Amino acid sequence: MKKTVGILHADISDKADEDEKDALIQLEAVSKALTQLGFDPVSVKFDLNLEAVGIRLQKLNPAFVFNLVESVNGCGSLIHLAPSFLDYLKIVYTGSKTQAMFLTSNKLLGKDYLAANDINTSKAYCLSTLKKETSVNGRFIIKSVWEHASIGMSQDSVVYVKSASELIAKLERFKSSMSGDFFCEEYIDGREFNIALLSGPEGVEVLPPAEILFTDYPSDKLKIVDYSAKWKTDSFEYLNTNRTFNFTSDDSYLIESLKIISKECWDLFGLKGYARVDFRIDESGRPWVLEINANPCISPDSGFAAASKMIGLAFPEIIKRIIEDI
Image (cartoon, rainbow, N blue to C red; front, side, top):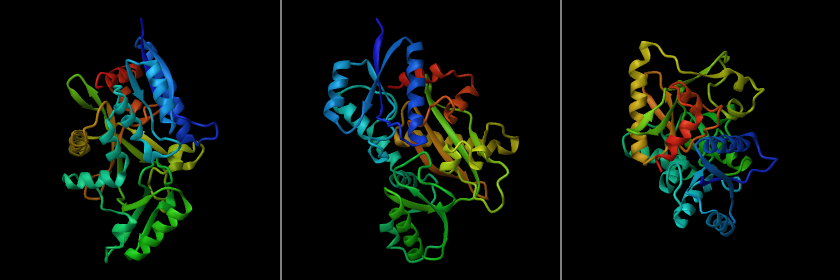
C-alpha cells in the first residue's frame, strides 16, 4: 500500500503574478516525483483558515508533508506559519523548520544573525535605525524585508544618497508606493553567485556553484537580478541574465570560499533538506552574503535543479534526498 503524502502549498489564484504561479509548477513537479518514488501525493492548500487546514490534514493522516508554502494569502511574512502549524499538529515535514524559516525569510533578521556570527554581509538599515544615523552616504539597494524572488525590485531600487535623511525619504517613498516593509543595504557592484545546498547521506552537499552573467548590459544599466530578470520572459533582463557553472583556475580560491561560507550558513541557521545562499563579490574579490534561501524554488527550470543536473541528479533523486532529511 502506497504511503500518502500531503503537499502543502499556497492557494494561488488565476490572477496571480508569475512569481506566485511558479509555485504551481513546483507542485506539479514534486507530485510527479513523489509518485515515481512510490508515494501517493495529495495536494493541500494552506491559507489562514487554519481550522479547515488542520481538519484536512488530520483526515489525510499523511506519512509526512512536503512543504511548498512560500507565502500565505499573498504575504511572504507568513511563510513560517506553515511549519509552525505542522509542528503544532505534530506532523513531520520536509525542509527547514520554523525558526530557520523565520530567521531567513526576514532579511533584516537574517543579516543581523550573519553579522553577529562574523559572516560578511553588507550593512543594512531600516527606517528606525536610519533615524539614529548621522553619516550615511553612497549607493544602496532597497529591498522588501519579507518578499523573496526579487519581488518589488527594479533598476530604481538602487539609489545614491549623501545623507541619512535622503535615504529615509527614498525608503518612505518605496513604502508608500508598494505594500509591505522595506530596508536598504549597501550596494555591492560585482559578480553574483548562487550556491545550492542539498542534504545527503554524509551531511549537506554543496552543489556546483552558479554565476549569473549579465550579458550585453549597457554601461548605464545596473547588473542586478530584479523582478524583470526573474519573471518577465520577454524582457531584456530575463533574456540577458544567464547562468554559468564553468570557471577557470583563477576562480578556484573564490569558489572554495563560497562553498565553505555556504556550509557555515547551513549550520548556523540549522537548515534542512535544501537551501540556497546568494553572494555578491566586491572589487577586491571578497564574498558578501546577500541572503539565505531556506526551501528555495525547486521547479525543473530553477537554478537549484540546474545545479543538481550538473552532478547527474535527476529531479526524483533531489526529492528523495530532501525527504531523507526530515
